[in-house]
Image 1 (cartoon, one colour):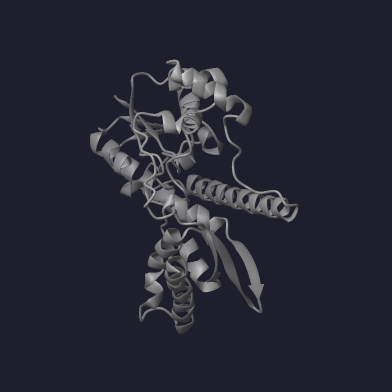
Image 2 (cartoon, one colour):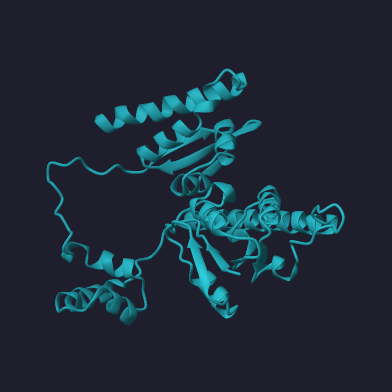
Length: 306
């Protein structure tokens, strides 16, 4: 019987280090690992994810699926119940090694009907709802903290991982033959941080073309609330999701607009995502809101060309 390990992170800035630690401590024998590409959103249904699909195709009855915590595999109650049905159909066991679900036998079925036990279904739905609430509260607290910091004049964003006073040392060591991996260990930063510090020294570096157009700068646009509400429930790329989540709500009468700051390319991507609001099935207020946002986005091209 095979031990199948599934891993996933939501953005390409995250790593599987924590998952690896939990799974290594579990002592799984001869694990066969299926890891999604970095940035695979939790909003994408598990049964539509490439590597999880590969795992199910590889699995045989009696195999065990191992995950570090439930939310690496699923996002909400609907996803959980869908996956449990598939695991039951294929006669696969499920082991969750950390979090609230780790103490539960999620495969428990009624001995006569074969259906998921009502007590298990209740606990799954309750814990999943609690997890979603926790993530929403964390997001709200993060936004409140960012807005408070902005009011005090503090700018957001990450500080450089390599301190300015260490950059010259890093560059000198790199020119002397020190590897990026070794420098990352020496300075206890990521390899990406070292690459940033020595970017113009790398073999693949190409000097900027003086005739090339200047890079796009972020622009703040007021997105109608009905557009924002639609996009929040839509499938978005990680960069689009972050941009939307960092928008600032501006109350206007009984409604609101979302002040979204992004480069024009991302604004155009978000406009494309809300295309369904221009269909005849949408209510008039939604169509009007999308056209207002479309006019704002289209105006960016005029400003950039001036």
